[in-house]
Amino acid sequence: MRGQRRARRAAESLWTSLQRTPRRIEDEMKVWITKYALTRGIIARDAELCSERMIVINGRYPQYYHLPYWHRSHDEAVTHANKLLRLKLSSLLKQIAKLEKITF
Image (cartoon, rainbow, N blue to C red; front, side, top):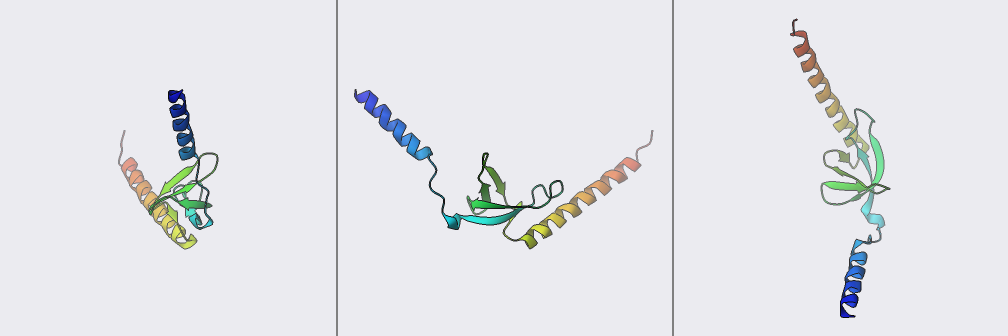
């Protein structure tokens, strides 16, 4: 009997700890995601702040993003996407130069 009560209490406490705490409106904010800016574009979503440098977008499967791939303003996101574009273009130019040196 004691063992059953103890097991039931342990299961109840585990269940309550696994349940999500209710969301507060202050935790949600609009963010712009630039992680996939060169393939999908800049994505605008509502997200919750997990820590100073990380956000989560809740849905069927939660998505987590770390800085510098999310931004609080659209202007910051555009600036970062342009930086990513410049870096990708310079990388491609280096690859082109390397391929042009190859002889068969």
